Image (cartoon, rainbow, N blue to C red):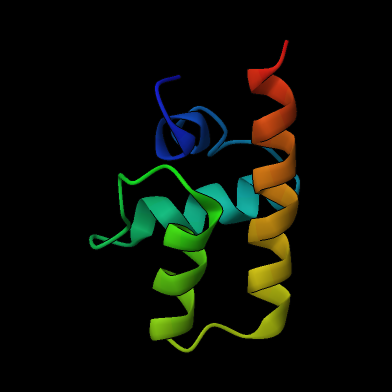
Length: 71
């Protein structure tokens, strides 16, 4: 796991909010690789007109990612 996108790739099969975000990212050919900041991914989804629920799911996934990085 080098970055958030790599972390998501490992979770595409998860049956969870993180898996939902991972599948959306995998299906999006323009999903950013970096910079590895939450704002990068939030901006990307906002430009695509993502609903608030998707932005919240992204934030939830980011929190899990950040927690995993500290282990």
